[in-house]
Length: 355
Image (cartoon, rainbow, N blue to C red; front, side, top):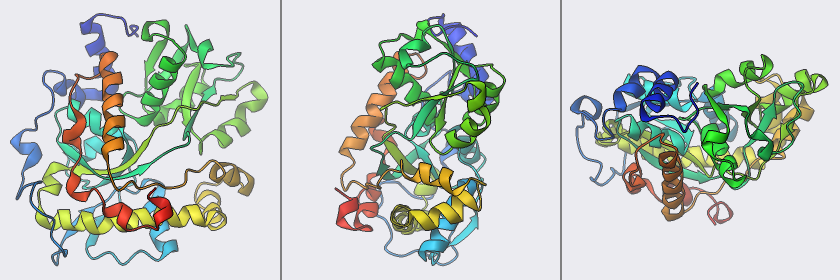
């Protein structure tokens, strides 16, 4: 694994090993989708329809069944269109691949996957935003580690996923600690490989979601594993879709109808932590009630901003950070936002969740 101060050729090999053939193809040219990617029936500048035409269908990602369960518990299942499939897809690279394969129309991710898709030459846009104000991730050490602080990451092997939120959280933490990229070794993995790499000692540190940490510590705390908290925030929790979907007037109307329910579902889970703990974490994730409570105590209060200006600024900062490391080419992120949908989520929730 070459350090990030390596030559451009080494850096390209690094990216290819992480992202696979689809990303490697994107290295020769930046965004600007081919006709095959767009396949538009209309335009993303056309006004949204006020109703969803009969027969409209969407394939919507629902990682670990979260969306269906929230909708069921909150009484939000009355969608005015058919959900053809709820694929269990969550990781950004997997979502991008599913978008390309046309097996997915809408997904919920953090801010970095849309940047990565742009870099790979795939055209997709953000349609809804929930701002995260408390950290969703912490750093877990391998068993037997003596690392106690982010500054101790110097010279260590760090699990790094360029196309996922965990990767940006790590880069932001390194920058805040004053560590340069060539002072650490970034090991290219996807987030679903982090736990295995930690357990095997292949990496010294991996960023884990708050919901992952209790189970990991339960198994490895006695062997010297521990976590390091950070105040680094991954600001954006968003919905996004291929431009080809949003240029289809019927599907765009269905997306607009889905967004209020997505927002209300998150508000419901936040306002009913006891029920959510039992129905999701205990019954579907096999956590104890105490573990579930430790997760929901860290939960972010949903915030759906009526204006996306702050989100655009944050996304630009993230793209610039990745460009500084040579992971993507610099670009203006405004093209990633379909602002026809800007205030839909905010209008769907009480005032306390939009300010």
